[in-house]
Image (cartoon, rainbow, N blue to C red; front, side):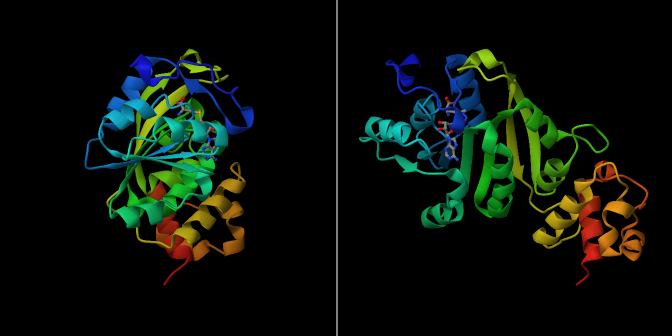
Length: 269
Ligand code: SAM
């Protein structure tokens, strides 16, 4: 296993790219075991960095696509995998990466994997919600606080916009926590591995996803206000009645399915 990790010191960790490199082989193996990929699959590793996960992922026999923003690290990976036809390196920002095009070109659904840079985790999760058609599952290392928000139950402190956006479309499974000492340099926070799987059908009635997103955003923009107050601009009295939702409640008590009911009532037809 140790041979998959770079033997020579490489570039310094770049803070702006959220670089905290895994260096604990036991944790690397646990993560790759959770990915549980095999030959028929196409894996996209987001932010492969110095390749801590990449070596083991490549040895599983799947087609592997690496998306790395740091040109120097992407260049090192291109050299390392020059003789490996199953590995393709894409240099660039994953927030601009066209997952749909890759899946269409290969006629397959993608397995996404990444020890994600903390600064892009939430925007990436939101962006991925619009390409779930081409995703089989995603196994991500996240800041523990973000993982807790994803898996939070209605009414809890961590429950919020991210929970409601993601949970309508995906199941969220907390896999295990990782201490800062498993990374170099160590981050200031704990991390958690999660597995997201697209649901067969979204929770609640079918709704336009932009309308849903807008209702959720508006409801949580003033978390302490009741739904009646935060959604006032929608003139929502009839919609509350139709959706069977008490307008005096706060947004963090509503499930994703209830937000979908409310959206359907606010945007009929
Ligand atoms: N996977 C490696 C590991 O576990 O050791 C590195 C993980 S490090 C937390 C995050 C990686 O994502 C870095 O290699 C960083 O350069 C890369 N990265 C940061 N922002 C990115 C972006 N917008 N698009 C693609 N890669 C990015």
